[in-house]
Length: 164
Ligand code: GDP
Ligand code: MG
Image (cartoon, rainbow, N blue to C red):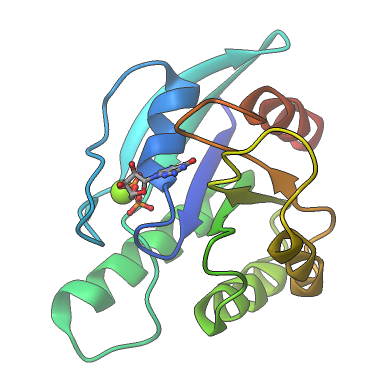
């Protein structure tokens, strides 16, 4: 079947915004409240002559006793397990957090190819200073993206196409 690309990351980093931007439809709910996407939502993308399915996930919090949070993590792990490539979304405004590092380690262990998206880079031009911290995640070159404005999403899709 079609390759599957899963979008993962902490709540509120802009996964659903990115998903809607690259799918070209508002299929997923964008919310200021973290963790709104509890189920996996699928959309179809065609880019560079390749067709693939993109999956939005609810967001990964550290291992927790909270049922909803642990279900969100489980959904994300299912999506990672089924994916041919992963987009890890982070937020330049918060810099690298402990949870980002936790997820990056989980992804490195999975062996699935990863594109590292540093979202909310809303200014065109040089990356903000915080951008360079993301090299420390060990996932290769981070990509500057503004999902709201659509900056960098074409380059992100190009990178995905190289991996699938
Ligand atoms: P999710 O929980 O990771 O799916 O995050 P959402 O897509 O629901 O977005 C969370 C919040 O971040 C919303 O208020 C979005 O409008 C905002 N957001 C998402 N992408 C960007 C971006 O590129 N720039 C800015 N400034 N805000 C963004
Ligand atoms: Mg979401």
